[in-house]
Amino acid sequence: MHKTVLSKSDLNKTALNRGLFVWPIRVYYEDTDSGGVVYHANYLNFMERARTEWLRALGFEQTELKTALGIIFVVHSMTLGFKSPAHFNDMLAVKSQCIKMGHGSLEFLQTITRNEQVLLEATVKLACVETVNFRPTGIPNAVKQAISTTINE
Image (cartoon, rainbow, N blue to C red):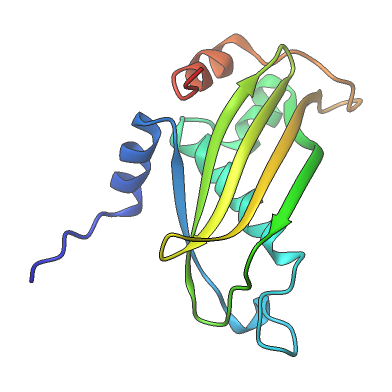
């Protein structure tokens, strides 16, 4: 049986076309607690990495947003629902979908799955802030335009 293997780049382009971004993550020993399951705070790291890769797939490096545009995205709030634990060496998919964009905010629905089994569901709200003073600011137009192509409203 032949399996089609997509590169991360191909996977990201396919996922972004449907408004959904998928980032694969393997669970390493360092991610687990003494019980052999992923420590709860590490799920936040997995979701952060996926949002960073989502921005990168849209053509924006966070360092460039900071230096060239003077903005960064910070977590404003989140709601998490843990459904089932992940374990050492599991291959996970962090699914990220921007579901809402405001003047200076983004809202994501993120899920972490293992073989399509949902392990965690989260709603994450980000605020766009100025790098010099951390005051809220509007999302730059070029960034907004790129993001708007991924939102299925």
